[in-house]
Amino acid sequence: MEAYFDNNATTRMDERVLETMLPFFKDVFANPSSLHRKGQEANVHMEKSREKICEILGIEPLELVFTASGTESNNLAIRGAVKAYKKRGNHIITSRIEHPAVLTTIKELEKEGYEVSYIDVDTNGTLDIEQLKKEIRETTILVSIMHANNETGVIQPIAEIGKIVKEKGIIFHVDAVQTVGKLEVKPKEMGVDLLTFSGHKFYGPKGVGALFIKMGTRLTKVLTGGHQERKRRPGTHNVPGIVGMAKALELCEMERKEDYKREKELRDYFEEEMLKRVPEIVLNGKEADRLPGTSSVTFKYLEGESILLRLDFKGIAVSSGSACSSDDLKASHVLLAMEIPIEFAHGTIRFSLGKYNTKEEVDYALEVIPPVIEGLRNMSPLWNEFINK
Ligand SMILES: *Cc1c(COP(=O)(O)O)cnc(C)c1O
Image (cartoon, rainbow, N blue to C red; front, side, top):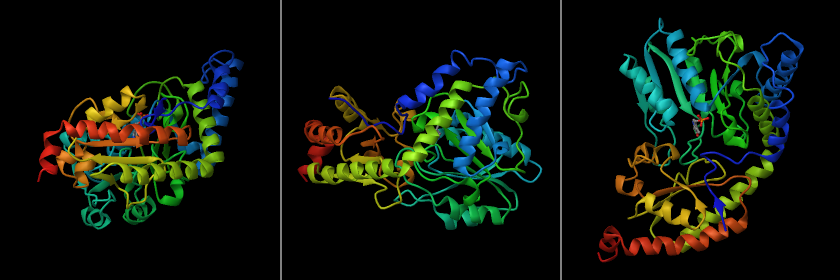
């Protein structure tokens, strides 16, 4: 049996999305910026896709820019905003638990001379809003806070933060890569100026993302080139990707409530059974508002990588720490920010369920995991020290 529990890293594309995309690799292949009929035909489909996405998010077509990924959208939002508002100040506020696409971008800007405040989270992974309020200065030009965390699934109170940030007239960016398609996301109702999302996290294609840019928000471009996307993001449009992303979002929107319920039931069942079957584990962020399918489990006294490899051998795909950092063996910055001791952070596995996961797969995992953990712990000096205490 095989079970893919790594849906926060990427999802399997929906068949209906693939079907929708195919003509745009073949017949409708022209460049949508070309003035001939073939180009204009592609352009019409692209703009229909833009309208579809905007309708779901409650925004205007002029407020959406297509990019090549969530990473690129985050770069465009953050670099573009701080450059455009440079005269106003040089201070940026973000959290300690952001995705590397935000965190490393802001770290680069810090090297270039911007000042940065990193806001803490509590042990459940929720942002310290009082600290955020205190950190706001005259020179603050950008606040960037993620909607849901990719490692723990913990959701931040974006509307509440948006209210505070907008009262001060500061630009508010939200990395919503983990929530668009899964939750109802309406940037304008949450006081957000810039919002990032990415097709492959919600059963759409890889290599296509978007950035919501609220009307009136200034943004300096990051890439230089042609005039596409109203000069905000040059480069020939990925028409199949854009059409696919719109279809994927439309399907998610239609099926969102049922998918949410099913995923949450499966995840909750998984966690309840894990607590019964495996001793000395911690479910990270369990008390917080969380995504329905994410379960971050700390197996005390073990290394996450060894668990990951054993589960992989049994056909179960999971990730340790965040997928993006699973090749460097540093402990997750997200778990450390939640004050999980470093030795326990190392023993953490993320199970991220999606709409294609079944009860059978979860039961299979529940059968496989306890003996894997027991076997590894029997070889673990830390575990033996613990039980002989
Ligand atoms: C996956 C992810 C990204 C990066 O998106 P890509 O499209 O893979 O570049 C950014 N932020 C979060 C929260 C993510 O989960």
